[in-house]
Amino acid sequence: MEARTLELVFPEHTNPMGAAFGGFVLSLMDKVGSYAAARQAKKPVVTVAVSGVEFKVPIRTGDLLEVVARVVRVGRTSLTVEVEVYKERFGEEDGRVLATKGVLTYVAVNEKGEPVPVEAHAGAD
Figure 1 (cartoon, rainbow, N blue to C red):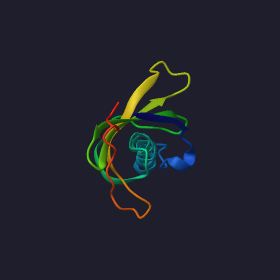
Figure 2: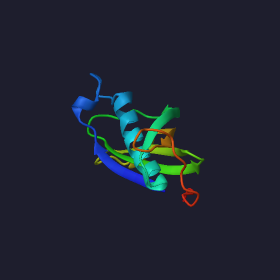
Figure 3: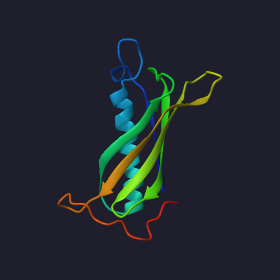
Figure 4: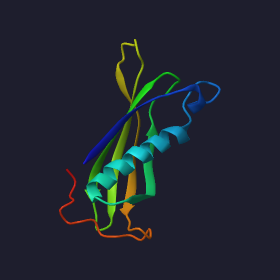
């Protein structure tokens, strides 16, 4: 299962040097990752771990970001999602560049926030 979105980086997302705050990028990764996990689980999910995040190249004001999240593992109640953030600068020859990547883990929950099993047929696509 996959989810993706586009986001433009504005000055309020960056530090005085014009580079995106890591927390801004992580929040995009978590949001889109949760969409992929919830689509796969067919129920609400909560974030339980963020690991292996690598900021490969700077993201700057004016960059267009494409956030792509793919479910790579489904456990009894948990889902592991790989998230990649690509940046694109209008008018530059480099085109689309992988800027950040990471792995996030989610747990399916019920209305009380308690872990619940992910259906057996909800295997990763």
